Image 1 (cartoon, rainbow, N blue to C red):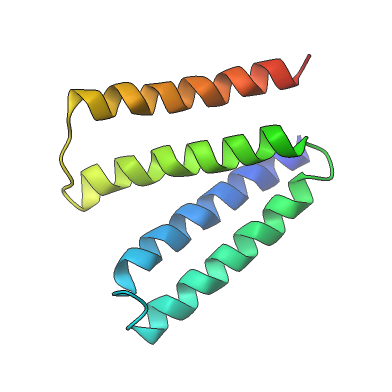
Image 2 (cartoon, one colour):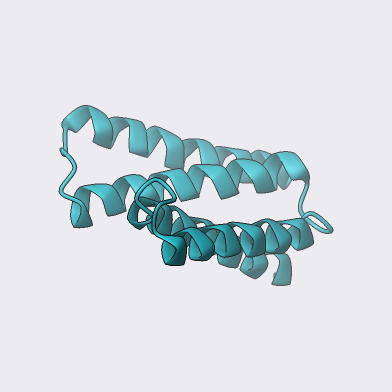
Length: 107
């Protein structure tokens, strides 16, 4: 159970790093640039801890898939990016893939 909590933490750090990247203005704002690099570094470190227990194929797929889905939702909600039905379908496909990989990984 601990590895899954670490994975959730790694995902959250990666998402926060990506939001910070948006505010870094192409790495021109040193504060957000530093925050971005730090959050990504800590996210990778925490992800590496999960790999002690969770297979790399499962952990990375969940880390990247849920991170990508979270960023897409954050972009639509907070950054007013366009919301379309096709985006919704693809987000559901990402989440379905993560759930499927998790289910297969347990067998």
